[in-house]
Length: 428
Ligand code: SDX
Image 1 (spheres, protein in one colour):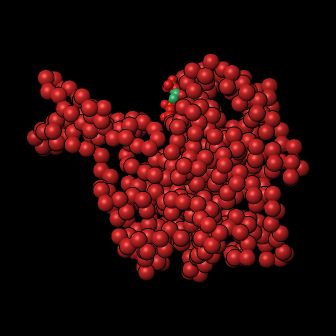
Image 2 (cartoon, rainbow, N blue to C red; image 1 turned 135 degrees about the vertical axis):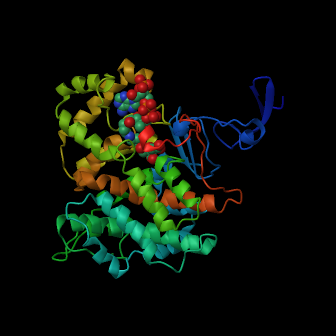
Image 3 (cartoon, rainbow, N blue to C red; image 1 turned 45 degrees about the vertical axis):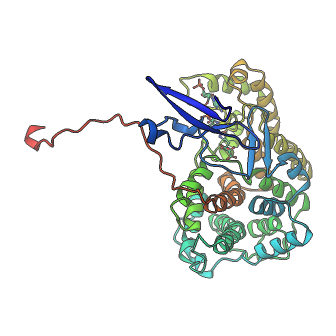
């Protein structure tokens, strides 16, 4: 049997299936023809053993705790690169030279403003609306404004929409925050960096000048790099599913926002900080660790565990280092950080977490930094989605430009009633 072939035997019939090799990671058994030749589906709810596509953007080795974007490690990118440069890399496949980065940054900066009518759109929300609810609405509403680039089969239209989404996300997010605190919207200032512009739109006020703190700017830019893309995670798969039907890109990204909001996904960022605050002091940690292990208790350690990482999430390592930098810069001595460090230490030495290979993930430390910078908990998922927009649009472009792309339409194992006659109501 060729090493690029698998044989599946069902009953007394064997089926030969091609095995495809990638450049890194596990080989895949190509089952695209399986139903046609065997009249069987495969069954994989949650897709724990299923590759949904080919992609060249991001590689994760969950056992080794490795994360690469177009071959570059997240450790090197978060240390040496910028979010704009990583955005270019994800979209175009190579790191930009100086001119390419300058041109790309300029292009993005030319799209940072929103159509003025969209500002009135916010007025329809309650002031206490969750900012993710506002983001889902406003991002989806962009579909009603940009009719000049709706032909997704045209690479230029796709790139204009991608640039608009990357550029406008900080503006939309900052406006969602401003609306929730009753302060006026701040227009973008394109003399600032992408991240500096976002900080000013969020925390600046018309009554006085706003000076961007370079340490905070660098820390937040690094957080954006850490969140930019992550292979076929749930929200990216949602974007791929919606995009595979030819849906407007703005509506597709709005679907990504809806999925990412879930507490098992990035809703965990705020939940992790709330959990640390609820624990409060190190002496209460053992009680919460016991709760997390108790099958009858729905409580889980938020920011711990991962579908892919069965080792330390490399992003959490960088995040922990960034906590130290930000707290020291802001001269904040947050006892929650000590609780987080001790909780990590105790969990990583507990047989339950060791056996189930549960480690801190990207969400475990990020809330401490974002809270120290001044973001309310509700904004944490918005910040993650702001950054993940570049991964979503890069994956969407890769999918749409794949000539073999098909609509995402899974099948099922049906367990309902077989055909039966319709009874009159008297017979029920
Ligand atoms: C993100 O996919 C991505 O790439 C996502 C993300 C990205 O960049 O896009 O990395 C971002 O979403 C990070 C994950 C943030 N979520 C949380 O931190 C929420 C807490 N974590 C868990 O809910 C859980 O770990 C998941 C959802 C993240 C992963 O769940 P899986 O892979 O489906 O695994 P599972 O839920 O089946 O857990 C395996 C076992 C279970 O025990 P058994 O049923 O086998 O006895 O581990 C246990 C779980 O009960 N377990 C936990 C736990 N996480 C899993 N027990 C206690 N605390 C936890 N946090």
